[in-house]
Image (cartoon, rainbow, N blue to C red; front, side, top):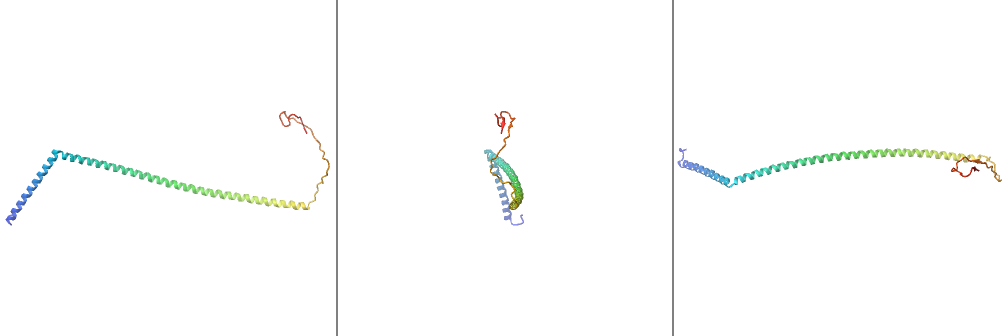
Length: 178
């Protein structure tokens, strides 16, 4: 160090001593400041504020986790309800489809029954027309063999019958019916 410029060497030594003095003064000032804080209770208040902030942060984190769990539970419930809704809609569509096919089958069965009834009705009508035509043709060619009625007084032969019914039956009070 001395081999170079002596002014530089002295300047370097003075700077080093100045730096050490600055460090000592800073350290002393820091200690004095901390001591004042300790005596006045500022450090305790700072520590209490830090602890309160940490507790508030811990509670906030816990609450955030609870809310996240509730959100997950709600989402799971909503997903389950959506799945149930889709299943119910599919069931409803299946039931409606079955009802439509059953209805179509019943309509087809009804139509076939009605067609059968109509066919039988036409057959009966045709048969009756044929029978009606046969009688008319037979009447024109047939000879009337019935006796002609004569206008004379009709005579009847009354028969008596003794009833064997009780007093409350038909014709109660008489024993004879003509």
